[in-house]
Length: 81
Image 1 (tube, rainbow, N blue to C red):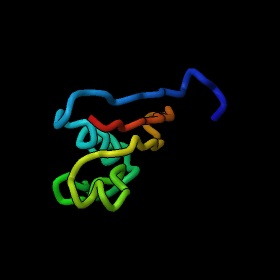
Image 2 (cartoon, one colour; image 1 turned 90 degrees about the vertical axis):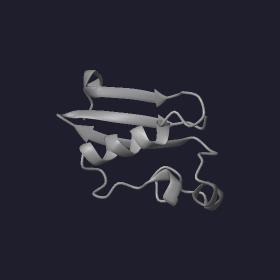
Image 3 (spheres, rainbow, N blue to C red; image 1 turned 135 degrees about the vertical axis):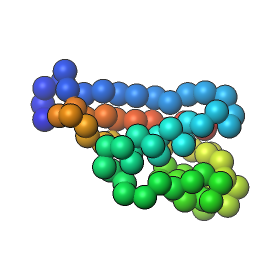
Image 4 (cartoon, one colour; image 1 turned 45 degrees about the vertical axis):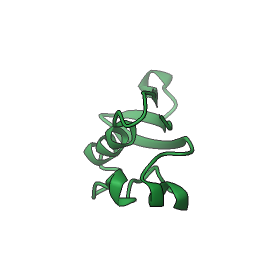
C-alpha cells in the first residue's frame, strides 16, 4: 500500500479519564485488529502493555498501533491523559 491518500494518522488526545484508550480499543475491535475488547480497569487494554499501566488502570506511555479498514491504513497513537 503506497498510495498516501489511503493513509490516516490519528492521535487521540484528551483530559484524564476521557476514554482515549477505550476509544482506541473500540477502533481496533471494529477493524478486526483484535477480537476481544480489553478493558482499561481490568488491565487488559491492548495499548496499555506496561505492567504498571495494567496494575493501575491508566495509560502512562503513548502507544502506537496500526489497523486497516476499507482499503485504508490507520496509524493510531493512544496518549496518556
